[in-house]
Image 1 (tube, rainbow, N blue to C red):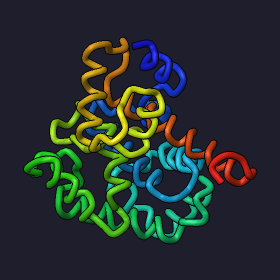
Image 2 (image 1 turned 90 degrees about the horizontal axis):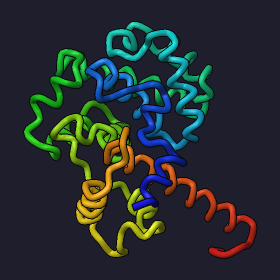
Image 3 (image 1 turned 180 degrees about the vertical axis):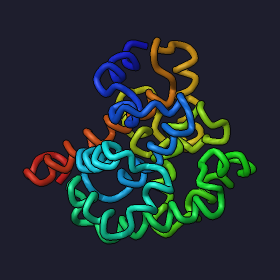
Image 4 (image 1 turned 120 degrees about the vertical axis):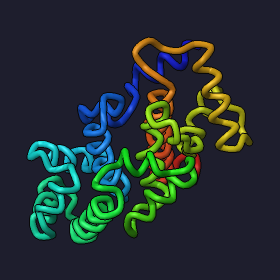
Length: 227
């Protein structure tokens, strides 16, 4: 199905890959993605979240120990440097709580958190229980990129990806997120794209979904269709 190749050529796949993060390669990379997912989870632009992640990564500050060692004031400074000023105080507090809980409850290891989780629902709940502010959206951002990497990382298809899939005629309207995911995975099994996996396709569809949402918002503001 050429449309799958085309959407991957345009949007490239996993968000983590754009940041130089390869979640398939080991626990350290997954810890980096966890920090990035927390930053992406706020209501700011993806560009600012990515820039802020790079500020942390350039200094090697992504593990629970390294983040906790910064303290609140230094975290606020780093967040401001990345352009995260609107949410700097709240996010600094959240990072300290999340990483403190990860350190105390799971020996500072996301792999340990995954290991002790019974299934996807338990994994999802444990992630969200780390601290206030790690809600369903942030957990989905994190876990969808680990699809096929952690065997318990099996979130339903995100609404943005589903909308984009419908736009491309890959998915029929009216499917549940789980049904939509199964259809998408079947498309992938029939015609995979070398160098990618199904999680890359989902991420590319999220990219497209955001593009479509922004386009619709611009048309609405301009008095065009959709108003």
